[in-house]
Image 1 (cartoon, rainbow, N blue to C red):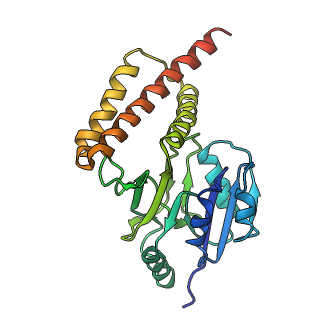
Image 2 (image 1 turned 120 degrees about the horizontal axis):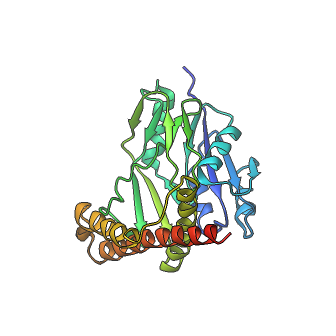
Image 3 (image 1 turned 45 degrees about the vertical axis):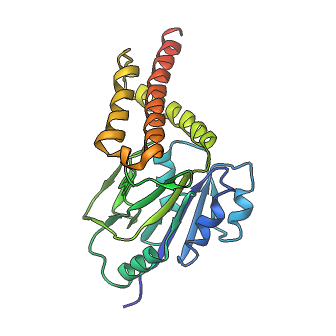
Length: 255
């Protein structure tokens, strides 16, 4: 039986520092689809070296963007790869084997080795980090259209692959803080749209709970100084999103 064909999609916005290594790791796929949100750096010219299937779409939330990217994919089987991720040779072989045989699931989670700066974070809830299936049948999975931290729905069986994708989400603390500033704004907007209201306890209890969960429950202390710093940074992010929820409420009430 002929191997099933695979589409890889990558969403980009000003990813010139990371996108080449990402695309180099998926050149074996039958199709690479780029959904770019009007990058102003060299992201698109770099992508043009790997594919001519580059589509522009203004930012409408990560969930909706992912569904749009899926629509541009020509093949039934899809691998979702972020610009800061790298597909390992072992993962490539595992995916190709699944495509050559009969896949035993409709969507697969892939374990992710995520790095904070240059350190592989083994705890803090960062590993294996099964956030959403990354290898799936086009007609069996759909993302929920949330602005950020998008969830998903699968109509079928869910499985897990053994091999890893490597992720380098933050090359510096400055990059982390800029990303969390953006994500906290989007999350506050999401909460507002869902009718959430602000309570002063949220900027105290939730950040402390986030730190406790990452550093103690998820064994972040085993990652040493990196685990401590990362847990504190996510506590700060949690405080920031609730502070922005409060700010959004103030703006709405003043109208």
